[in-house]
Image: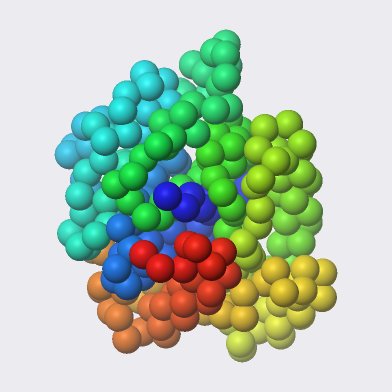
Length: 258
């Protein structure tokens, strides 16, 4: 199973929207896909139509109680896409794990030897705490959504430093598969400037596909649906389909087929 963490310590950059729609696109192309909601806010779970009252075992139980992954997985309305939901209990997980040995490796242990899915996406919280560290230790690679706004590069440099530390201490094989520019607004000259600066800084690490600001992307979660299902023809959905295609193109050769 190829495991991809979707992370950026800055909030509001489109992590959950990216996680939901990329996972949906991958499932639609035949990949057996797992989405793990590791954000205490549980937005990915809500966006996939899993109501808070219907969430039993969750990512909290994976980390704290070390239950089997299969026991926490629930099906979604999208064929081929399963979810490990998040509950509010997850907000206390970081405190509970502080005194635990191997506290950064709990999620990696939970995912070990799992063969039911081809690919796993982890929706991380907007911080660089123990939850995100668990995701980065468990992941093969990292996808970074980056909002096209003034402080983007400053936050990105902090994340890249964290990735280097993770590589040195916990997960030497962790890579960055790409940076996805989100909330792109062609009417705003600053957006173009930020995008150019990011590409100058990171080169080919930045995906060619950009995710536009799009009302339908914002509306979809309130209906408990990915935008690709809510309105597959909107510009946001088309962009995520293109991003998924580009993402698959960056997989190692042995991983390119579901």
